[in-house]
Length: 278
Picture (cartoon, one colour):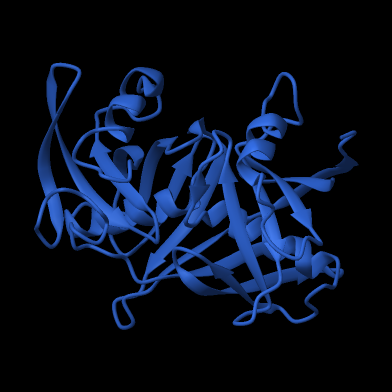
């Protein structure tokens, strides 16, 4: 298997191009190759596949072998991959996902290489049953949730995949390993959930740390940053444009009031290429 190691703000992926379809053993391959001690090491395995609806299709397999519906950092990596290699020559690229449909990605390039990538992440889903969360309200705002003997409040948003946003006093130092698994697999979330622990610093600046469904703590989560901005606007904490600061760096998120669409701008990087031995 020939691959390219890529990352978006440290959220790293093994990117594979050239397969006609998703391999039947993709989950097994992800578990093996994403292992950081006995494999290549990554948060997920990403396949760039042919699409009948868009320029390319993206399929993301988490490091635990489960499939993610969408991933904002992976979308940026895929866009950079196909643009830098001239698989797609134009700067407005359409990428098909299984959770968010076809997304339009705009490349900002220098010397023929993508530098930053702006992604139309689509409209947020706020209805509890569609997120999904076992609460029939629209939106799911400041709902109580019990975990580890304590009661928290959360706001739920889907960006093609489910997110649980919890506001805490200090997101930067929050204990992800203690609390993340308790919320990810909580009975309120029938398909599990990504969990964003969030602290609002100002009307245009948010600190966020994430526990990703199927991957655990990661340095960044693009869909999580989008969901966090939406939740913060709904709660009246921020404006519709803000920087979300993650452990791996900042993403600029916009929630356009006229169209109801969320836009994410950030970098993507190629690290190295390689080939597995089996």
